[in-house]
Length: 148
Image (cartoon, rainbow, N blue to C red):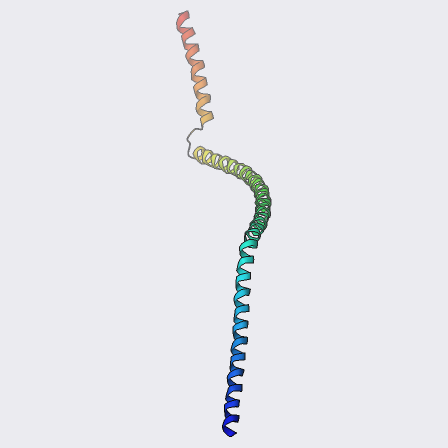
């Protein structure tokens, strides 16, 4: 009986292993079928899902372009405002510089004329006055020469 019991035990072990193997095969088949189902579903719904993603991407792109355009317009507006302000400031400074240069030029002319006068060099007005007097004298001499 001991041998019968050992044989019986071995049969039970073999049957138990066969049952586990059958369960593993069944589970493996279910995993395989689940994979096939996922593949089939992805194939049929994948195109639609892709179209939805493209549509969503287009919407985001439009919003992004609009936002960038608004920001560029705002920046350009600020640049124009600053440029106008700078041009105004430059114009003011240029006017002030011209006034100062005129003052400096007049002061320089006055000092040079004063220095030339001290040295005994006649000014432009002095030369013009003398020239006018010479013209008068020449005219007088011509009249006297004609009368004689």
